[in-house]
Amino acid sequence: MNPSPLTARLQSQGALISDRDGTTVIAGFGDVGTEYRAVREAAGLMVASHVMVFKGTVDDALFPLDEVFAGNVANLRFGRVLHTLLADRLGQVVADAYIACNDDEIMVLCEACRPREEVVSLLSRCQVIDVTDDVEVLCIDGPKAWAPLRELAGRDILGMPYLSVENQNIDGVPVAMLRAGKTAEFGYWLVAPVEGAPAVYDRLLAAGRKIGIQPYGQDALDLLKLDGRFFNVNCEGRVVGDPLALGLQWMFDFQKERFSGREAILSRRSSGVHEKVIGFALAQGLRGSSNGDTVFLDGGVAGRVVACGWSGRLSREMGLAIMDRPVAWAGLELVVQGADGALAAASISLPPFIPASLLVRLDEV
Amino acid sequence: MESGTALIIAARSDVVTRVKRNLISRLSLPYTEDDLHEDVSLLGSGLGLDSLDALEVVLGIEQEFGVKIAEGNVGLLRSINTLVDFVLEKGAGTPIKAGGTR
Image 1 (tube, rainbow over the protein chains, first blue to last red):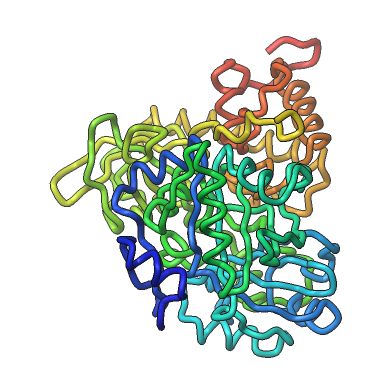
Image 2 (image 1 turned 135 degrees about the horizontal axis):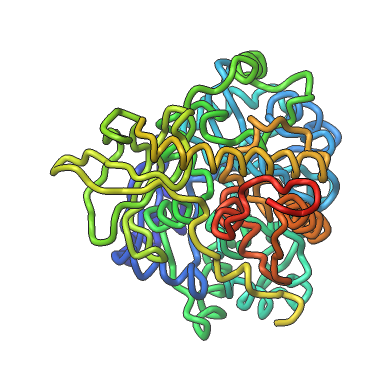
């Protein structure tokens, strides 16, 4: 699939490009550590070209979407956003989704671990149209993410509740702005028409210069999701598949009579989950864990690594492992069998640190 | 499994169960204990508790375990696991008997 005009422009300016399920995405800008740090300490700006966007009217699409997505879409109120999940018939994760109810429009933003055609197929009866190629999703994240938006859209944006949506105008470009994000810091997703998105991107970067905003890409986002304990559909989601083992029950309304994969998921739920994903950190100074590495507890096999990377905040390598349920607890000494030898590790509580944004009161800035 | 590991798991498991029961009961959550992953975020994404819910959680933990959570210590409410860490660090994991003694 061709890159969006903004992605192509950034590529020509040196952005590193990669492919995710046929979609061209910006992997980064050459220094993942700097990008990660910007989001944890100030703000980062990302072109989220991996996000699929669907639109419909509330009248037509609300109830059909409720019959497909795991969460209670039918109860979604005007101006609010639901964070939920799309599963396939077998109850395996397909997409992590925000569903936004904005005026009389309903908008679905999916991060998927399956090809776009499969998501389109699952939503084929939902009375929504695929507008992914017509819009650009820009994400601004960080403890100071609000600052450039306050300058461009006014002070009222500080009052936006988490998981809400409203229409804004940035330099003449109409955007739908969601207060949302997956980095554990303040986050805003801006959905702009593809032709106006470059101007919005440039204005956000210019307005954020004084607070140290940096462009960032997918590689940094993967690390931010990992140590911020946000579900990453493209890492652990793709590897594990089962939302119950992933701990995503909070994305479900189990009382609903219909959603895609319901029978399979309820069956597994009633018989009990046998594995669970938990966090681990390698001992200080150790590196070298990889996906698929075996995890040992007291000399016996206890699980395997499903995601890993360097946490700038912890200053150590950390990851997620899917463990046998009886031993899936924080506070245990583990050994990760890396390619170059055994690595001392411990299971940890997540999120493993207090995000800077949690200590900022937006009503006082 | 070695006995030391089994003891760590038993102590943690007990506190986790009590914290989950407390959350489900006080907040009328539509989930079972098994549904609540210990790392699920309590604030914002995840269970999405608001400030009143958070206060209810703090009161529940203080009563259940006989600990005091300092005002404004929102960092503790990151997840069930971070609450459990706090309780275990305070040595408050054993049940409080009638009369207030452990």
